[in-house]
Image (tube, rainbow, N blue to C red; front, side, top):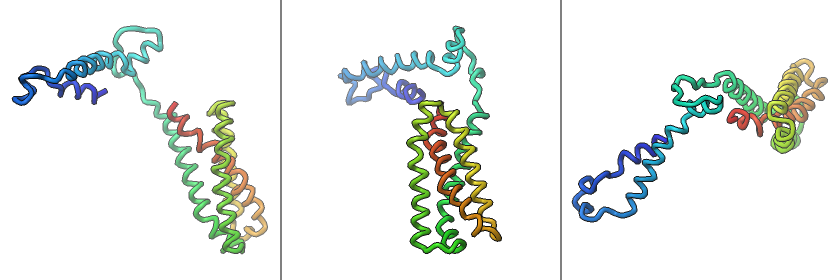
Length: 197
């Protein structure tokens, strides 16, 4: 909107502003462009968020600019969920291969394969997660799958307790190859769209 208004302001209004080279015959295509830019500038006052809010409420007339309130709560939740999801995903994906190799005694190739399967599952579950959001709604998809994500993260954290990690490696795999990818599939394709809504 500001760009269009700036464009209107910079367009020449008379032949004296065109300079000596063009003052004798101004191009004929400037007039339609100037007219459409002027119309857009007039229309832009009718499309402001404040007037949209008033018209959505059924009111009319000009609205003050102070009526629009930024949704700090929902935006903060969306950003916090996305931050936690990305932080957890990259922490597990970045350290899992070393943990499986050094702590649980897996061969390097097996540890790398398990880590690749983890990443593949996280991205594979995005398709059912997106479809679920289309069917049930984004909120009803994000909340339960984010809870599964958190439960999987807790299982992975508990399973890495140094004295019992060999006995609890089944919990590690349930969390790392089951719950975290499932939760990622519910969050990754939906949270940004939820924030945009």
